[in-house]
Length: 304
Image 1: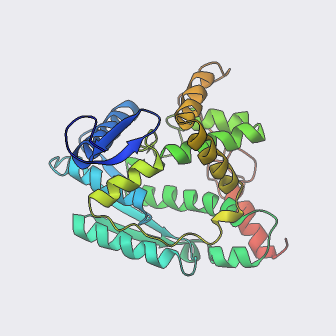
Image 2: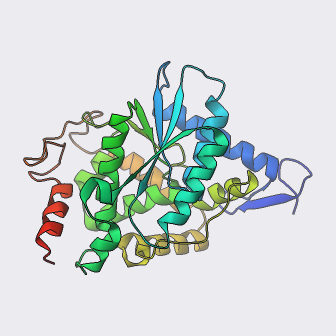
């Protein structure tokens, strides 16, 4: 099949748009969308220190590659990579190897922090306890704490994560299904006052399209997967959304657009909401005791 924009052979087809794109035009399309999303989400200022959450997977590696391509000519901006080792045997070691390789290739400083060093236990330790909640529930909470805390220590002015369209829409649907309006509202806020501003430049790009971009620029596509992912509610929602997208192309974009329209009508919406603090650790928290402290207490007590 020929590219819709030139006579070259297409490398990808977008069912939702009907476009066939060759290597050159696909890369151009992805980079243009990332630049547009960055402009929509923030203004990059002279002296900004951008800390990129780098897992070593295709999304974060491709994003780091793009950001380096965009900003390598700007001496007034600094890119730093931050990786988190959750302690998942047979999985994280492989992705961290890739993270080190791409950071080294791009000449970007990489800092790696572990759950074990920060909390005294690993994700494998948590999973071995057999708690009713899926391991991913714990992992997400602890990862966010490590990224926020370490980004602050690294002097970050902005934190950049590689959440793609699939990730964002899954989160929206999870909170719709749970009826968690407050979380939906906080998801819409561009900056919670107590935290370093977070950017998601890939939020409007499907996971498949990021993967193709990564392949085209020579980023290894890691075949290992987290052994706990299939246990999560998110995994179920992901399968359902993928089936809807296959049968009805454009569903994921529709969910995102519908969510953004709906949020305009939520009462009490603030651009910079303030959160109370946890009574135990003093970190910002939506409840009296933050989720991290609850997990630490749970692991300390050893009860299910």
